[in-house]
Image 1 (cartoon, rainbow, N blue to C red):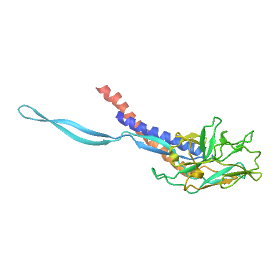
Image 2 (image 1 turned 90 degrees about the vertical axis):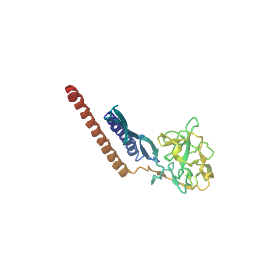
Image 3 (image 1 turned 90 degrees about the horizontal axis):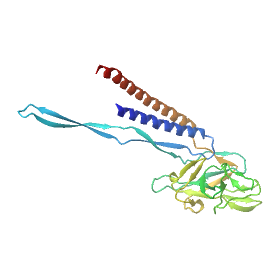
Length: 278
């Protein structure tokens, strides 16, 4: 019976963590460039139960024969293994702000190992020069004229240098070239992740790569993309689907909770009634 307690409790814990993930997705439904997380729920290893007994044969010496019978498999609970972002293109929304830039996927080659598409990111860096990657093109100019993200990270060009401008009166072509007074100032740095699921999600729409800098997307064969100034890429959260998943997760949590309560009542009866009679 105690094993049933642990099994039901593990189901409640997994559904609680899934609810937290879905709530975070819903909270970021209007965050530019946000990539919704998806959960991976797996079962703990199953146990194979056998019954070992003996049978007495009424002989002169009292023969006892061992009996071995298989009961079957027993599940030991589930757990949420991980939450991985979905790198699907979000809706492109017009803002008419010069500093807003949307990154629009074109052709993205498939990864040979997992068969999933790669993706492209804006390349940004913090004040210490640590590289990060984002799809949030809601940029702005700081007091020194540097193009920055909402978190204060510097937007880099294709040579990993900061982009400094005199004013917001600049233009960005579909090829990422930044023009000011009809003169090329820089080219937006775009990185390509062959396997974006290997990136680590830090929050605020930022990702980092533990294995060093990602490759320059302009130099990657078969990778095509465009940029649209005055637009931003919205979140790829499906609000209706997320609400449906949250309701299903809540119902599953509730079902495990009732099982746990049933075990609790059974144990209470065993202790208070059967134990007292003994």
